[in-house]
Image (tube, rainbow, N blue to C red; front, side):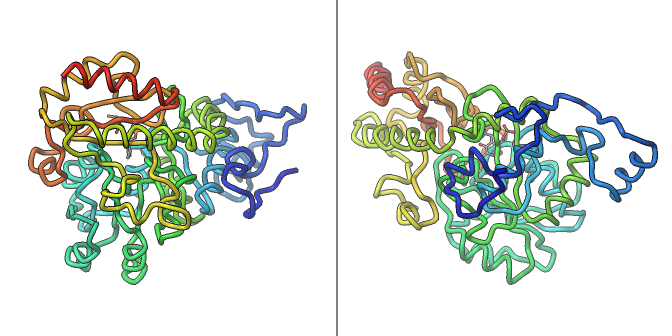
Length: 398
Ligand code: 7XF
């Protein structure tokens, strides 16, 4: 039986990480437990499971073997003890943050985050008496200045959606540990193959599993990894009682997608490096944001044994011709699909100001530097020549 081995490489963990499901027929691929509930052998046993005195599944909102397999695999990849999967990435972010917060608490968030994370913090948290200060986390001093006695949590994305701002996590991890503050990182853009925030002090790492972890554009899901104690709290408070639990079928698909994560990330990154160099040279483009380019402010954190093993495959760029040029480019592409989301086999392109980051207030968009000429491209797994050719013909339409 293959047990979790810490020495395994990430490519191996994405296939074998976690305890295998024991199958009576010896099926190579673990069966899909597409069931809402589990039959108790006796009344006493059912009661004992509810009381936590006996192990065993009860009801899929509280746990399911197919979901558990996915959770163990992602936890192994992140180097964390445990994980909780959820119905969407926002389900993971909401369940994770709200499990640790109450009215009167204060949160420090990066000022450059995905639109719905911003909306959750800025709109919903305010209604429940939780105050959030948004700061530029490229300078840890801004976090120190925002800190109060009531600060319970620091939240960030790095690289940040949409234009790949890189935040150095280690000093923030130190600060959070000194002040007993939960440090939560959204690792969606990198995956644990390219970056493990837990190595830099993050207590909890969240993902939109909709993206690279699944990788095939056919599921929305989320996952959070952390310590046994923190994950237990999330599973049996916010996830259980607010109910953003994942469907077993979606968990099964993500576990299948994970098997090729290492291969996919390699090709995504290779393609993105070529595309970024091409865009960087193009005279219709004002500025390219891609951590793999030496002119990117976070570039020194990219490389072997650094915070990010590679630059990833999301590129943002400013069109010289502003909004009109962005519209012409996006409407002229033939292969690259005009859609939000990222991390799929298909290259996807979108306009953050009117799409992914439209939930931000105009002021917050200005602070995050999300202008009307900004375009975000998720470089897919097509042959790089075909991606470059489509971009070239789209840019020629200008
Ligand atoms: O709830 P979801 O699975 O859509 O995940 C939410 C989410 C959380 N963190 C990050 C860094 C994300 O990028 C997302 C979703 N982002 C998509 C995008 O940026 O294209 C959402 C499309 S509106």
